[in-house]
Length: 482
Image 1 (cartoon, rainbow, N blue to C red):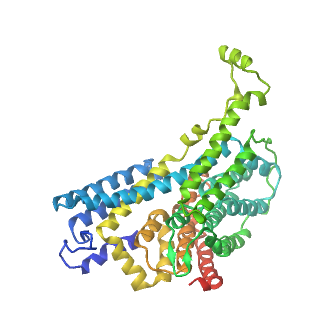
Image 2 (tube, rainbow, N blue to C red):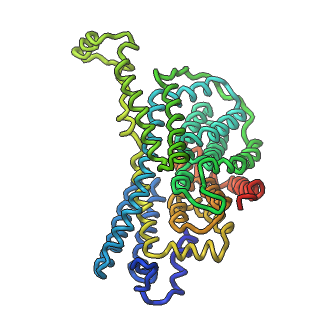
Image 3 (cartoon, helix red, strand yellow):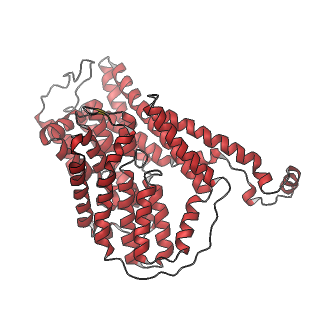
């Protein structure tokens, strides 16, 4: 947070006092040394402090940033209106709103598919299978870590981490040392796995959707897979070092087998088909990826209609028998039809609205002029490599979403290799601290008492070693992209 304050505030001390210096040819006013600029920064920092204290205040993280976004843009619009150029602020906020809408609709479709697979017992069946195998603690340490690394590129890293943590808690049998080490491993693996796929993390998705142009071409879907080996190194280095601390014991087996519900496998296939559709729309038709994702939502809607119409026949119940049972208020259990809109309703709306607040807050600070100053400080004075490594360190304290959105708003002139570097560091930098990623924060709640901030902090040196090695690996194997 201290570095963020320095990057945003300290450069303003060297600026001239005139607040009416035009930042561009479009009548945009530089407010970085005006009280409005200072007030906007104070509002954003206060809102983000409340976000970071969510675990203690139990105040949903979306609430302070939504309020902050509204207040920041209100004072900007008031100032511009008083100078007769209100249209400038309106154009800017509409641009930010469009960026958010693309991101939100994309995530909404992905969350709907994840919720549908969860309702069909896909994840629960995987969990029960692992519990029943009777693996040892060290085997489970590697299995849950590997699955977190491999699942998070398709599903999101938060869902993956929660699933693997449920397995660890089920077989850990109160072994606090194993649960702590396994949770740290899961957080690192899930964040690393999400860093080399546009679908694995919000930051990679933002970079892909932005369609960044570099001297080597556009940062396309396939370009992200150049980060596979660096991401793998980021997970393997700390995992190998932690392996020797994992208790060499055998947990008690057991656990009742759970079967997936009807249509589960087909929903998995439809989700993969949706990903292919989004990539194809973007790569071949040059349409925003969100259009392909929304088309893929239609696949699930039609399949949900099929499940709804055929569920009675699948259970051997006629319509007449169903009417009789409804008359007697009987419990239908699994006979209840699949409803796709209930999966949409169960999306993580707090997270989606949090993104709205972040995008508009950072957009407002950029409109005031602070992001231009920060870009000058980081990417011109420090250099791109140092700046991008700093972005990763900053994302361990501040959520990587506002950090990455700020970088995308700055749009520094960088090579493909540098854009991939900042994607990597923003994705895996959150693993350095338990509060640095959504996966870490969620697991602190799920494994309360076992996985803690200070327990994670104890292993910071080995996680930082993995962070450093992953950067070195990227600079080495992808040198042709710089």
